[in-house]
Length: 260
Ligand SMILES: NC(=O)c1ccc[n+]([C@@H]2O[C@H](COP(=O)([O-])OP(=O)(O)OC[C@H]3O[C@@H](n4cnc5c(N)ncnc54)[C@H](OP(=O)(O)O)[C@@H]3O)[C@@H](O)[C@H]2O)c1
Image 1 (cartoon, rainbow, N blue to C red):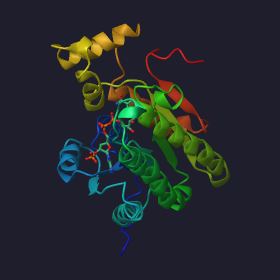
Image 2: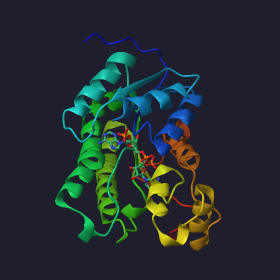
Image 3: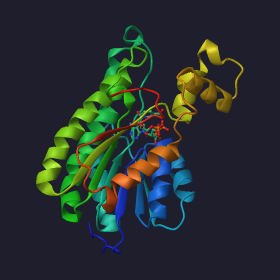
Image 4: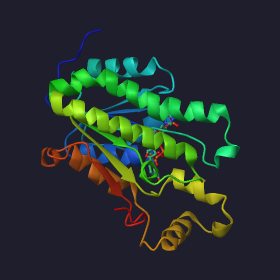
C-alpha cells in the first residue's frame, strides 16, 4: 500500500457520513477547509452525500461497521488516500426502537455491533494517526445516554456505553494530546425522528414539519434540533477554539431535557 503525501489540509473521517447528522457535519467541516472521508454501508447513499459537498476533497468508503474487520480496512484506506487523519466523528448507528420486551437477542447484538463496537474499533485503529496530528475525536451519542427512556432501551444503552467509552478515552487523550468529547443531541429533525414518530397516533395525518413541530411543542421547546445545530457544535469541538474542552458531554436539545 502506498500512502499518498498529505496536502497539508486536515482530514476528517465521518462514521455515518450519509446520515442526517453526519452529512451536516461533513458540509460544515468542508466549508472550514477540511478534507472529508465519509463512511457508511450504502455506496449509493455515500455517493449522493459526497456529490453534495463542494470546496473540499471528498472520498466515500462503504463498509459495515458491525463487521470487526471493517475498522482496520477503513482507517487504512483513509490514511492511504489522504496521507493523514486529524478528526474522527462517530455518528453511525442503526437500531430498533421499542420497549425491551419487543426486542430480540439479535436486535441487541446488532445494535451494539455497529454503533458501539464499530466505533470503538475505528477509534482504536485511528488513535495513532490522531496522536500524530494532535487530532480530535467527537462521538455523537445522544440525550438517551444520560436520560434513558423505556421507549428506547436499546439506543439508551448503546449511547450510554459509547459515552462511557468516550470519557475514558478522553483521559488517554490527555496523555496523548488528542481532544476527545461527546455531543448529546436531543430529538433531531431527519429520517430517524420521522421513523420514530410516524407510527404514533398523536401525529397521524401530519406532514414531517408539522409532526416535528408538534413533538417539540409537547416538550415546551420552540423546535427540534436540526442536524446543522449539531454540526456547528461538532465543528467547534474540532477547532483550535474548542481545544480546552476535554472529556465533555455536551447536551444540545433546545431545553428539551431540563437536565442539570
Ligand atoms: N437523529 C436524532 O434525533 C438523534 C438524537 C440523538 C442521538 N442521535 C445519534 O446520532 C447519530 C446519527 O444520527 P442520525 O440522525 O444522523 O441518523 P441516521 O440519519 O439514521 O444516520 C445513521 C448513519 O449510520 C450509518 N450506519 C448505520 N448502520 C451502520 C453500519 N452497520 N455500518 C456503518 N454505518 C452504519 C447509516 O448509513 P447506512 O445505513 O447506509 O449504513 C447512516 O449514515 C446516531 O448514532 C444516533 O443515535 C441521533
